[in-house]
Length: 140
Image (cartoon, one colour):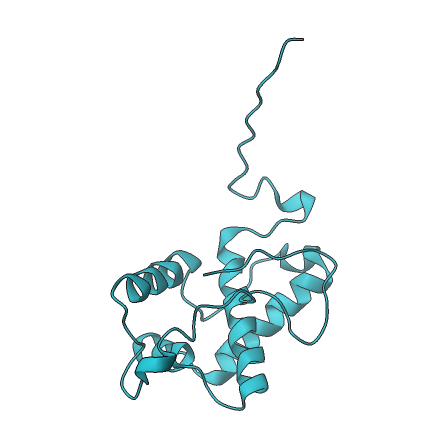
């Protein structure tokens, strides 16, 4: 039996009709994690504080981006028109997290040595309060 190898390149929005988000929208997933993590723990995470100090993002802007992600989870066609998010691009967020992990660094002063890795989680894009109709890939 002859084996056929196929490679599919998805990008530049080609996967949107199949319900996949484009890269630009993934920062809204991080915002959703930050919002629900804040509500769950009753305090801002150091990542949220870092984003406020470095990028000037306030709580309302994070919550607004989180609401955009919620709309996408409920209806993947919600982002068919341009959207406005104050969050940095996902590439910047992932690079920042990678550097912090490699350097064993904290996001700003006041960090406790024992809880430096609070941003390492397996539920970065999942909503803790309800299940979604599709599985999510964690952002580490």
